[in-house]
Every structure is written in structure tokens, then in C-alpha cells.
Length: 49
Picture (cartoon, rainbow, N blue to C red):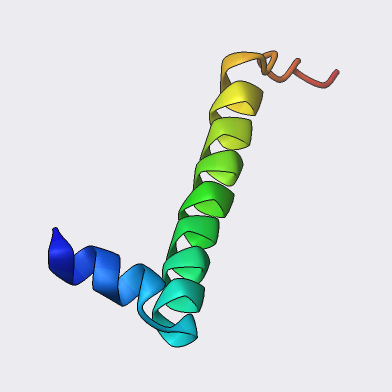
């Protein structure tokens, strides 16, 4: 635990890298949630005549 606290708050590079990792995780989660939402609420395609 001391290693992670030192990595995050010990210098600015560690803090910025942790923020980038967390931001990337949040972005991927948002895209995945939106994709799942669109799939669950999609209507089946109607056949053309």
C-alpha cells in the first residue's frame, strides 16, 4: 500500500499516470454502457417489401 501511495502522491508523473489510467477506464466503461443500452433497446429490423 505504501508503494501505491508513494507512486500516486510522491511525484506528479505517478499522479498523472494514475489519472490517465482511471480516465481511460471510465471512458471505456461509458462506451460499453452506451453500447449495451443501445443493444437492449434496439428494435428488430423490419423486412422490406
